[in-house]
Structures are given as C-alpha cells and as structure tokens.
Length: 553
Picture 1 (cartoon, rainbow, N blue to C red):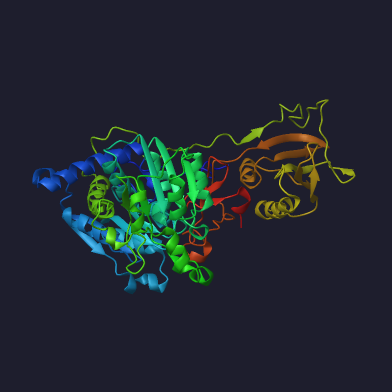
Picture 2 (cartoon, helix red, strand yellow):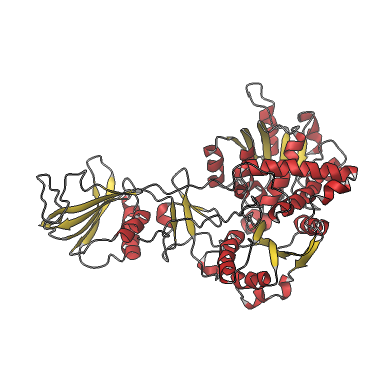
C-alpha cells in the first residue's frame, strides 16, 4: 500500500509560527493562538484609541509589494469593507476581483483563477463564496502550484464566509468582544443564540469557537424550522457544552422566571437575521410567525438581567430587525462595538499571517493533528489458523457457500453488523461496486448468535487482496473480518477497524451539494474525510458529517 492513501497533507508551517497559514475554519487557529491574537488586538485597539502611532506602526506590514486580494462572490458590507480598511492600514498592494466580469462566468475553475492571481505576486486572499470549503481546497492546490513554480513562502487564504459552513473571522471578533465584556475572563461563558440557527454560519462557527472558554452553556432560541442542525448540537454536547433549546424568546424568558429552574437566562444574547428566503414557499407563508418568535420586544427589557448585552453580526433587516432600532441607544447595544472590533481583529490577523507580528508566540502550532491508528489487524496467528501453505493447525475454520465448502477464495464476514437488513443489503452492493468484487459467489444477510444481523460475502476462486486493498476495504466495511481461503481452510485472517482518515479514492463523494468537492461544482477534486469522536466521517472541506456508508458513490 502507498503511504499516502489515508495520510493527511502536512501542515506547512514555516519558522515563523503564522506566516503563510490559512484560516478556513475557526479551529485552524488553536485556543492558545487565538488568545495570542486577542491579546495583540487589545494592544492595537488601545494604541489606536490613544493615538499611539509608534505602537500602530509596529503592526503595519508596510510593504507596497505585498499583495492582498479580496474575492467576494456573495454580497457583503462589514466583512468586505473592514478587510479593505485593514489592508489600507497596512500600506500594501490591495486588489479586488470584479467577479461580475471575471472568467468565473466562463466556467473557469477556482484553481485556475487563483493560480493566475498568485502568479501576479499576491500572497493573501480573502474569499467569500456560496460554495463551502473553498479556502481549504485552494490552500492545498496552491501548495502544489508553489512547488511547480518554486515560490518561496506560503499563500494564505482567509474564509470570509462560505455558504452555510463557517465565518471564522466573524467568530474571532465575536470572541474578542465577549472577552471584553467578561473582563478578559475565559473561565466561563453563558450565551443565548437567537434567530436563524439553521442557515447562520456565524453561529455554526461557535460550535468550535466557544471552546475557547473552559465552561460553556449555550441556550438555542429558535422555532423548529430555524433550529440549529442536529450535527452541530451533538458536536457541542460532545465537547462538554451544556446545551438547552427553546422555541421562542417568550418561552425562554418564561423559563428564566420559574423558581424551580436552577439556571437563569443568559446575560449575553447573540441574534442572527432570519434568512427565510432560503426556506421555500411553505415557510414563507409563516414568515410573520417565525420572525415574531425570534424578535425581541422592548417591553420585555424588565425581564432581563440588569447587565444584559445584545450582539448581532449584522446586517439587521431594515423592516423586520430582530433587535428593534429603538434599543440602539440603550445599554443593551453591544453590536455596534462588536462590528467595530472586526476592523481591529482583521488588522491583527493580516499582520500575523504576513509574518509582521507573531515571533514572540511560544505556544502550540496549528490544529491538533490526529494520527491514524493501526486499523487493520492480522489475526492469523492469534486465531490459531494456517500461517503458510505448508503449515496446518488443528483449529482450522471452514466456510462454505450454501452447502459446498470453499476450497480457495475470499470471505468477508461481519459486514455492517447490527444494522437493519435492508441497509446491510444496500451496503453490500456498495462494497461490490467500490472494491470491484463482481463475479461468481454470493452475498447475503444472516443472523449471528447474538441475534444481530450481519452481511457476508463469498467469492470462490478470488486470489485475495493486497495490503492496499485490505486497507481500502477497512474504509468501506469497518468492523468486518476478511478471510483468505486456501485448500479449504482459512489461510489469512484480518479484522478491520475504522480508519481515522479516508481520501484519494475516486469512489468517494461528499453528499453536500454545496461542497467544493461535489461533482456538480466542477472542480474535479476528491473529498477527504476525518473520523469524528462520535464515529462519523466529517468532510475536511465543508464539515458535513456522514455515516461510513454515505461517503461512497
């Protein structure tokens, strides 16, 4: 087997801890790296407020040859303009791609477009896209481009929002603002997320971003039609967050007033705009009802804690704002300072990724890497079976297809054990297709001694599998047992575990049609999956969770 089948691409981190790094998801910066960014942002913000030019100059890239490109394939105001103004602060070469008249409209690939822009000596790209996983994909493609053209230094891609996936720089400015209002205490946070939690990428980034705090309580306030996707709720719970769910603001406020409830409502509220236009005609007919469930009524101010603060990533809908404009001139208003903090955060982030600051950072680098365990066990000797063609054992295990014993061939047992029979049959068809196990033999569902169903596949006369194929098989049918039959007995026996990573296989597919790797999006690239703590496989580009049976075409 080649060593690259399940290996993750190496993280290219130069001597400088941040230069050339990509921020595709919030976890691309680990907790200690984010705390460093917030400490330096606090320093820059204070210098700006007191007019300390010497300190401000210590952050500036100040290089007219250093190129930053903004590429916004979706509308934006705050993110686009704050990055533009952050780039102007740094006194560098700043460009914007006019996507309306670009070759994207001639079906040019993302890879080709950005290869050209890199060739014009640009080193950093800020991208907003409807497609999810674009920045991760481009970071990998441009590593290959850099090797082909002997480019020194890395190319940074910054995700400014990709579909329903993540918005990591918004999460950075949100966390910074939370810390400001918690007096820089990262021990605990209690946060209410209110609004459209289904489409809101800013709240999706919080699933991992809030791990900055040691103890986290999250109250999800939205009607079922706009609720947080279950995969994100489960991930928060896996991280140890306390998660509570409420169908409306009114229900949430009533809950906080019940004497039997030991946990009060949150002091920090984070609102999002309902994106009802994405929900179809059935939901649009109930738009007024859904908006009412997540819009704060100024008459309820007295039901809040005295020091409550509201946040909003903006924009607010001018006709139907979830935070009424009458609250602008009240102590609840944290959203204006939150928005202004985006400029400071993005100035510091650009300085870090350009290598202007960060030499003094001494913590761990990058996201934690999870290595593959040995997921294929050769148990031939453990089972007391034949180990070579001329060696016999009194404990020979025999298999037969129907009533006729198999003399030579392949038997795969314990396929998708304990699943419903119809799911086992469906996955047997996938196994045959992906592994090319067509031909004579049979496959069926049987019931084991424990009462659980399992799949079996017999291929008389099959020559067996090489190491590469056995490891690929583990990705298709983890938990199965592979038996190579010689002279009527088991010659080799393998037990298959769950690979930590699955990639570089043409049969793979991410089921999210908004993922950059999906065939409909034309980039002709393969997905890559990482096993999560709860046993799912997560797309490394768009973060969509899949069962192991779902990642195959």
